[in-house]
Image (cartoon, rainbow, N blue to C red; front, side):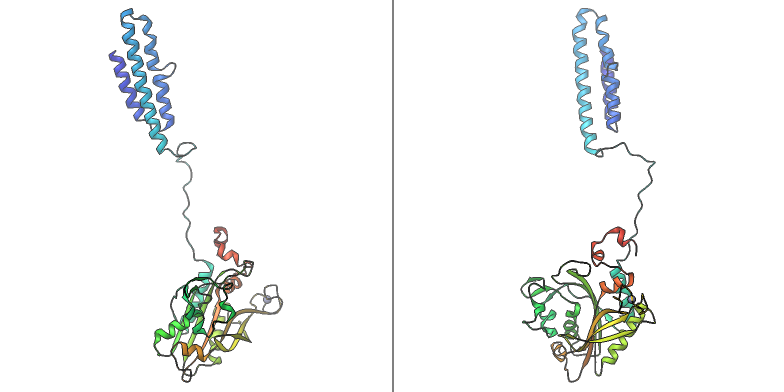
Length: 337
Ligand SMILES: [Zn+2]
């Protein structure tokens, strides 16, 4: 009887020290298996005097129950903490590599442009993605009847609020904040949103960089010089610009600006559709209405403004042919930059 008591105590310690289901099962076999220690005790039963057989048998059965109970408890604990499946921890496996983060190509392109423009005296600030109709449209000479305000083109988020359709919305905010003080040389960049189809060159989210300057006698010549410096910084010293007349509600005169194709050096290639020129931005002299909305007197101030699609410039710099790649954020794609 004493030996059964010892055996149970040993078994319980052994079971509670089992660190995995495998070692727990080894303990079960050691005590309750066909040739286990407790099973061995039962074999002694036949050699006992008849009056001792019954209490001995009861003691062995009680011991068996206690050991089984302990095994079940331990198993439940181990299953709760165990890893789902597979073999035990393999310490010989190589460690997991830590990936270094990197700057998204759109951000990198915007940073280069910001640096060039800071060198020309422009200061940078961020402005809200959720903008008021006033700054997004009214202050930019885009009245209520203008098609850009159509529900189908614009993501309205509430009473008079929308996801900005262009970063140009910052002009009114900057001028109001300056309270009539000039000169102003300001820029911002960020995401803009327009309800649009998704294909290789369209996406409902895109990034713009917007720049404007207000002073006493700024002219198209200042605009052209600023853009030429920016193009040379971005695409190299041979970069040339071409201005084409255009229309924007917030500038007059307005010009679309093309840059000479840096891939074919104007000999014609697929990127520039064999024209030697790439469309990169819209620009112009700020309209009097826009200056007035910013609290400035158009008789005393003139300003120029331009806006660039950062996605487009990023695609040109890296010769990426599908805008969706920039927003899918596939690791395998982004790791190349
Ligand atoms: Zn070309």
